Image (cartoon, rainbow over all chains, first blue to last red):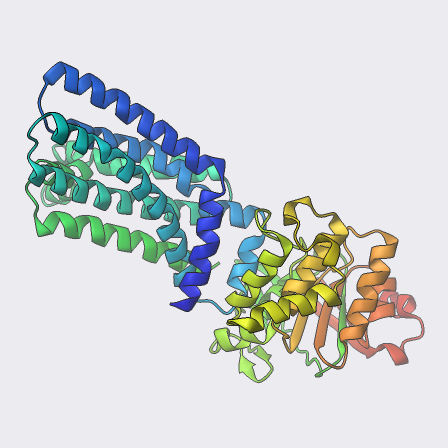
Length: 233
Length: 223
């Protein structure tokens, strides 16, 4: 755990010391504020379901920009050699990178919490779906960050890493659309792989353990594969 | 030990023992397998076949224990550009398991040993090539390792800096075992106690420098 602390401190320094993190956070909050205002004036309904869907899309579009550097830049600058020849388990390196980017994304989401309080100040929002929506978006972020780290571990080109992350996330998003074209049992498999299929119930207030397990298990699988990639160099 | 990349043989049945406290120079042209050998020793790569032991630890089975005993300077002398020199050295010390006051003491010790006082609080991205190389060597020495591995330590340095690094390496002999690679005969001749010649992934010969008055002639006879 001490090693994780040392590595996490270094990763936080890299993440919060880079303009990319602040740029992504600014774009995220700007687009979200714009959407929130438009939706509120158009619908005059005190809920955040639309905002959570917006956050879902923005996470898929913006997180690759945060994760693309994780391993790709270390590989390009040869600093990965320093990390991998230090007496440190590869799993701690991956976990530290995950926690640093995840912390930044959670910071962005915390900023978006202001919209819930605006609703509270001017209306009577149902806090249940807001809480489950936050749970959904946090699970979603954990998965996209994990996929981003896996893709970054595969290449030294940051643009390629970002493109692979975006591609993987989009394929998961639209997996349910493909299910209609597939014979059994592959149709069920594709349906169950769908990102939006597990996100939508939670964001509308229905929290199922199966949905949480989907996000957690896929995130762990991606982190495990990223670790294996480092172990095999 | 051997190392293959698919069907390409990078190192073929290399059999070598490096003595405690000596400076061993690994000599060979570019592409001869020096960096592969060094990366295997540093634990960055795993051998395809054979056994590699570092200070009594199996480099594969006891990888973490082996890595604790080495300090490694890759050819590119990588540093984290967003850290200051002192910060970078402290990070590397903590990564090697040092804690508390020992970190600050070790950092002060290597800053003094490598004459980095003037740049200690500067971001590493602003360093000249010479200071960057010294910082990279300092991070490898910060935990006082038994084995120091240097991949082409004189690369990119000006003549004055080359002399400084050479003196530094010679000064480490005895207290540390040093393995350095180079493709420059003169550098190895002036720095190493023993020299091994690596050609096309094969160790062609090993000799004490004291027994090799004409390194160039010996090298050419092997090549």
